[in-house]
Image 1: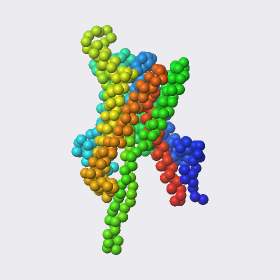
Image 2 (image 1 turned 180 degrees about the vertical axis):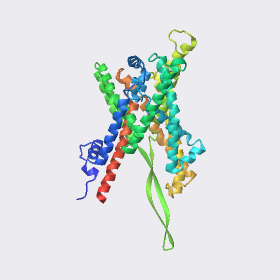
Image 3 (image 1 turned 90 degrees about the vertical axis):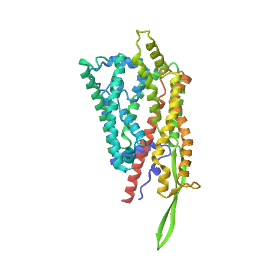
Length: 447
């Protein structure tokens, strides 16, 4: 009897993702991959509860309850930053290094040549990314400790005397934690399903959800506001899925010469070139919020509550101006997200060199001359399509502020950026899971 396809087995009332998980658990190989992912995430969550040496956790908890900026950063670390655990830096130094390498490839000829060497070139660029990750993690760890010490959350650290050795020990511990998490993420990519780095970020965000739900109970007197916040959240998930799947399909024709019996015949086929509306993903948001957080962090170095000097007053004004709950903060964030979306999308498409690739493989867009005309046409299409993705990401950036104003819920903020990351990772993992299932269905049919 012929095996049923996945679509035939799926009931009308069963969600696609749930059905894929049910089917996956029936296949021993895929079931083992899923259990491996679960085991790695358990290790990650265990390490998130292990603090670095010499830390007063009660002082840290009090600090995070009073500081909204660090509370925002803690959400992306899955609570590891609140504990100042050995993995409190997460995988973000690696992500920062990856972004820097992507931007450096089109600038430096040596890197550009490496990117054209196929798998060997990609491996060397990945190795350089790992090397770059270490100093970034060291700088980020030192900056994090400095900010916490200046804020009074920790003490006894510095770069002189007896403080140097404990500080170095903590920074090395933080670097080791990041390196270990990146290694775990690559193991998940190799032996599990999906992108391991993304899955680790996903797990960290999901782990903060119970705490966020608990904060919602503080607004039990504002039931209407909580319901409105929930409706906005569901609408955001729908829009995130919609824009993640949206694409502009450009028709492409392929023609090639085939020699038969001493004569040349033309043969080819029709396909399409997909241009994603949100091709930049969450990278513009990371860029924008990193820049927006920076002035407030720098200003905190110069604030002295006991001083009335001009410098201290200016630093206090800058910190208030870049407050993560203020209108100016989200207005500038919207503009930066839109700008970075165009910047990143155009760089990525320029690296792909679509017009040259089409011409080299005998492809062309009907009605458009190959070469420069095709490149100009694709650039116009990319700019138009990217407008939709840029405005959407800008809305994602400012929706927490808008939702707070509309619902009047102050104890709980809508985690729109977290939703974007979670939905994106879930969709990507689901696609790879379905691809694994499809491959095994074909193998079973052939056998």
